[in-house]
Length: 433
Image (tube, rainbow, N blue to C red):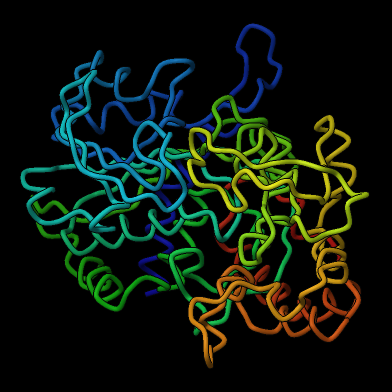
């Protein structure tokens, strides 16, 4: 298996050499970070003459033009578009059921993989020669696009179709932090044993879940069989091809040109998201229904000398938690550099701990899926955390330093795995906890 993986990695290394260190020929200076979608010369030849299925959303752009429009103008035959959570155009609520349809602009069939199914069917892929994936991730375990990526990869393996991933910079790729997910807390908001902030691009992450055989049993078996028979003359077989970003490193502070989802409207929300998304598992508003989601959070029962705000219905948050209720809490908004300085290189737990300590009804602070005698997996908070330990630590009054100490063994083990799959110069592995 390891021999196969080494041969497999050659494709990635060659592409990396072509793209990662791209220079301005006229000046010899290094350009800014360039997402892979803009390096058309690296992947367009592989799409010519093929029937292509594309997994994409509103972040799939080449400059200011959508990838679908760019490829169609260049003669690429896109047969079907798959859409993730929030839909192909990226304006649906979190968790909202999305139906299939036809894209009005291109008349290409749209198939939702966040509606009645999460994986393409055999019928969806009839006649397809190549799968393409281009979606902006934010580098946080409970952001569901990496779960969609895994389902798409498993489909590619099972139906033996090559998959090209157009890599994009990770705006939270400069650090690694949080508890590593435990097996029994797997869900669509966390499918793999990785920390909350994993410090990898989506292309690096794809390499890891393939190489570590973290896919489904059926997909892992398919990959082993494909590797054993891939030299058959004329055969088409699965291979993962990652087109890298140019000039990206894990020290890069990349500001996204397009909001990745309705409730991450600006880079400050993206920076705070790993720390404040925990509030989704509590009775507090996490800021959906405001213009500063994940920067503003609170509850009507908290002290009235805190920051006041009222969640209201808006696009991407039609029915926000605590809709139309005056709430009190915190506002962490500010200039991006100020937010970066406040976060540093770690998840900030102090707001969660403060909110719990101030909340008057501690028995009902954490949301639970059923009443009576709920199990640990019935708490959405535990699915976000990836364990039941963090909730108990909060209830037992542990300090942030003690909680963080419990994360160390898992983080060290993960970093050793992560290091094998990096495509870009790393700084995150040296971060001390």
